[in-house]
Length: 489
Image (cartoon, rainbow, N blue to C red; front, top):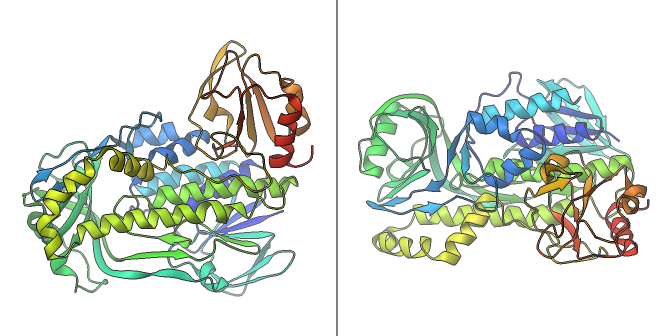
């Protein structure tokens, strides 16, 4: 089995590295000739950092970025605090880091594992049959693979060639992005300012540099092609924030139209869509890159299972059934933030009084934190697979003791295999019960008692979600579960 990925952004590069790690022949086609220096995406949320930790990349990226533990919205001078110190994760913050650095780490990993990178390859045609997919490139050359994944962004050529509906709408909201050096002091936080003239988001890159995301009510008629000047940024920041933030310089800027759209389907036979090719939304919330990385992590192990020949027939279909609802949830969350920022005049009058009540409500703030971070994502149990408590939920990076040595769960994930955790005393036959599936299941016999809640046995999916939990099950039951998820031994 072979896979072609169209698009060398974060989603495509994550997927390429995962497939190469699993031994799948994979090629990435990228229309850009030069490597990316884009900084449009700037945040990695906790769950995406956990997925990167499973691949050995998180620690290196964390040293390059800024750890931001809270969001401090200001609404007409009233400052609020929204906590992002996640107690259930070892990444209790949002990592502010330019997209180019994340892409560089992912590309280095993918190349090192054997993924082939082809730049200057623009896809112009796509046909598929029962055995594979043929892509036509500009210039007439063709490429063929068993499967294709479109990771080619909001204006995806792959999606268009599939005629998959990209349902939703453009907001007709013109947004300016600019990296600016500010001489004014701002706290170590994501700093949103919401005023009568618009909204500004200012997360810190460090050393006085900030990413400015600006929606200026007075500049909505400006053509998208008009260059962004530092004077325009200074004026917008002054009017919207009500403060002179002392913009000393600007090193990058762009102007774009915010959209809210989602592909009606994430799979069309042998072709899949992921990342911005599957969903685009407002930059408020900074969820775009993280959502795409989570798409890749969900799809990669399922394609690897198909390559290795043990995937149940239903497994590839669960990519869409699991990730499409998540994409829809992200669109709703970011649209809510956009509506709050762009509120009409009557709402703006009461916004400074209503917003604190909403943000300070414990259940609302907790739900928002879990959604923004990705830590609250869970998946339904597939039909025909044994269910259990916690099935489909995220598994934290458990501290384990194996053979008297300390270990972490995430260090044993990331290669496309399940992990079967068994606590001491669990009468499941120890390593012998998982041995017939050793090529797709790593069995860890742990010192000590219960591992998670009341579970003594946990089957962890390759993407770090719970497949099944039980308290001292017998070996026959464990084998039944392994057959359901991992096919015949």
